[in-house]
Length: 223
Image (tube, rainbow, N blue to C red; front, side, top):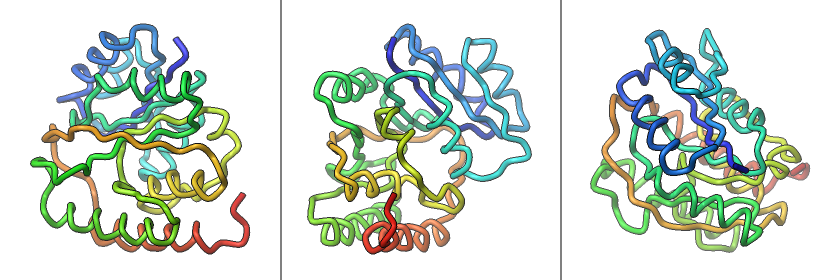
């Protein structure tokens, strides 16, 4: 199987087993890679179910964890998703096929065809606002800069440099390939209620979202 499914986890023992089993059922043979910063039994459960677990403890934050989750995959396609049951695992084969068969370099799974019932209104308005800014600056329709579910061609990730430290890394991971000329595609997905509490920090995320949009669009050195 030519696909790595990568997740970052922090105290996800209530959901990690179900997510891993769903992945194994829907895409047998996929490499399952978890970068874990938990204090609970999450890494033990994941390893017992056959996932490759990379411990990042003490935690260094979302960005450094996601960078490892992307760069340490060994397969041709790396699909990311959150380990809280918010994203539809059954869409992984479709995303991977768009990379492998249609030759896209990145496929973004957008949550925002309309407002998801599981997304608070404040989060929804913020996502729409920043997607609108990016759409104007990057001259293409963008709907979801923060999706945690995407498929990346591994060779593109290997060639890409990005600032892992700081919030809102998914923004840069979407916009930088666009401005560098990679083939980027988007599909809409359903978004579900999460298992467990959100770890997002809204004010920090909003500031870093704007910062990353401006940085990618106007930076002289985009490599």
